[in-house]
Amino acid sequence: MSYPPNERRIRSRHHGTTGRRGTARAALSALAVASALVLVGCSGQQPGDGTATPHEAARTTPRVTSVTPERASVIGQTVTINGTGLQGVKRVAFGSTSVRVTAAGPDKVVAHAPAAADYQQATVSLKLIGSGGKTVASKPRALEYTAVGGVGAQLQYALAHWNDYNTAQYGDLNPAGGDCANFVSQTLIARGWTMNDDWYNRDAGGEWSPAWGYVPAMDAYFADNADALGLQELSFSPADRAKVALGDVAVFDWDGDGSPDHVEVVDRITKVDGQYRIELASHNDDYDYRDLDETITTQHPGATGHFWHLTR
Image (cartoon, rainbow, N blue to C red; front, side):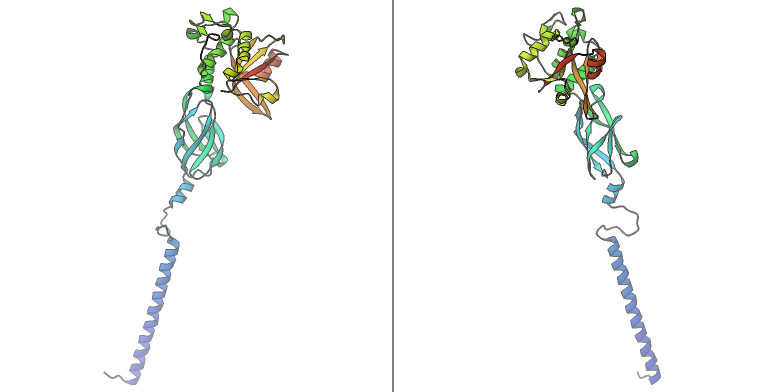
């Protein structure tokens, strides 16, 4: 079909305009799709849908999944707390006692669990504390304190019987001059020592050796058998106090005459202003945490003594 010249020109201009507009629309559509893909990235989520990625959720929602190990010694030990979003944790509360973390990352926190209260078995909850003292996560009944032999069992026994004499098993030697050595010997049995022909208590205190229940004889027995028993003698000096450990035995000479008068067991050691503070449990006098320095200055001025450090 032929068209008049003017009509052909009009139709030609119309077709050309339509083609350019279609091309422009296609380009804009392709640009929109590319922009959306850049925003979505590799996550597969649509932009603006409000869904957090797993990494974002871990950063914003701290959570405790487990504690390793689940059972800790009553004298305290290092534990690892596993979970998500933990990088901001500053302190960990084990029951009512909080401590600084030694390491923190997105999936775990490391901290040293403090000793159980009076070294007694218990199960405690955990709280993870962030900046400003805010609790960011918690886990009920997360850690079980237990005494598995050794010094933990020794101190557990000492704190259970410092004022509750175990007379059914070992009697009470106060009528014979004092029960302090009898008490210390009992804690050593709890630690894993065994009686022998020189060191024993039989028939609930009905028969006992001097090395078991008489302070000068106990001190001499320790000195004579130090290597076999794994004992090292240390002084009360500040330098030697750094070597003292929980469960060690302190021997006191009240009047400085060279003859020992009293023994106690070390049950707490703290460092205050660079100096070691040592506390002890004992019978007659009955104490749970008796301060060493107060004992040899205020209570017994001029008293001297030494420690028997247990190396095993």
